[in-house]
Amino acid sequence: MIYLVEDDAGIRELMSYTLVASGFQTRSFDKGESLWQALEKETPRLIILDIMLPGEDGLSILKKLRSRGNTAAIPVIMATAKGTEYDRVIGLDLGADDYLSKPFGMMEMVSRVKAVLRRTGKAENAQQLSLGGIRISPEEHTVMVMEKQVQLTLKEFELLLLFMGRPGHVYSREKLLMKVWGADYVGETRTVDVHIATLRSKLGACGGYIETVRGVGYRFSAEDE
Image (cartoon, rainbow, N blue to C red; front, side):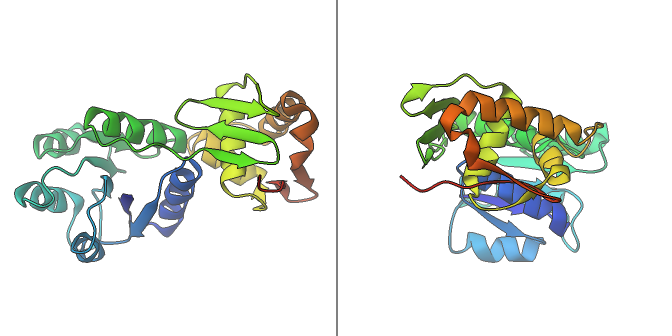
């Protein structure tokens, strides 16, 4: 279980969806008060903690986490829109395990989460997803189609993982750009169409599972195995 503490609802939802699609369980909170209530009932494997929060700020929360016996060992990744060296140094001095400067790409976040979990010995196996003859392993970064391994580029892999994490969900091209390429990516939505076309081709007979929703975007539609 990964806890997300972020007061911006849009960013919080995007982070949660990306982590779930990558095989993690999450709970999200918009302020420190909700986090403390949750910690009384369950200890997460990792916390992603925004510095700028209403009420109690992230640095204060981190300081308390490190001072309490039942939360001192929980890995914490700090996130902030400030991007100042001062905040980063203070956070790391207080015991943060890593740092994300906004705006950050969602897959960069996933990569940092996995790295911190590996370093702290708290890694949990990301869930394998299997639908309609396609099996994808986020942990091993492999894709099997009809029991044959298929080589995908990083972006193709991330697109497929996102689709299979929420089958039937329709993603606009803009949302796919944000989720896979990151909020700071500067480019055209045509990039998505090109990657979808090559991904379909590599998936062969299963390429048709990625359906075009005219005027909207794309969705993944296949039966559970």
